[in-house]
Length: 133
Image 1 (cartoon, rainbow, N blue to C red):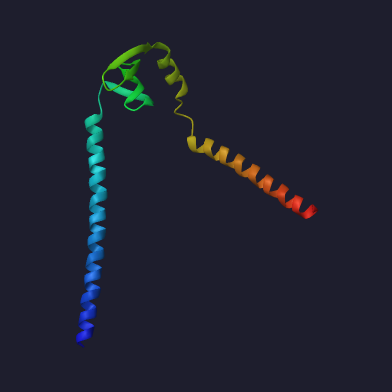
Image 2 (tube, rainbow, N blue to C red; image 1 turned 180 degrees about the vertical axis):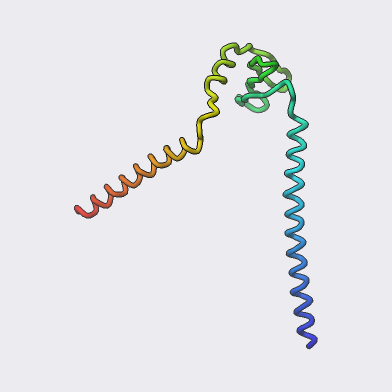
């Protein structure tokens, strides 16, 4: 009878340990999500939006920023930040390329079906080649 009590205590200890690990993982996951949201809100700006970055080397990159509905090309390094050019035609290209009516999933499904069709045709050709030999 004494050995049953020891086994039950050990099983209970293992279950408590597993529950503790799950709780720590759960707490860590939600804390990191909360921190990511808070840091994102701190970094956001009402009037400045970084559109794109192109890294040129360590701590050196080009950036396109939207400031008061105007677009600028910046060069950024450790020592300085310079406005290289105001991009007049960039505004037109962004508005022209964005189409809210395009269904991305539909386009992906078309591409996927083309690829799967070509793969199945290739597979059928390989089977026919093996039968002829």
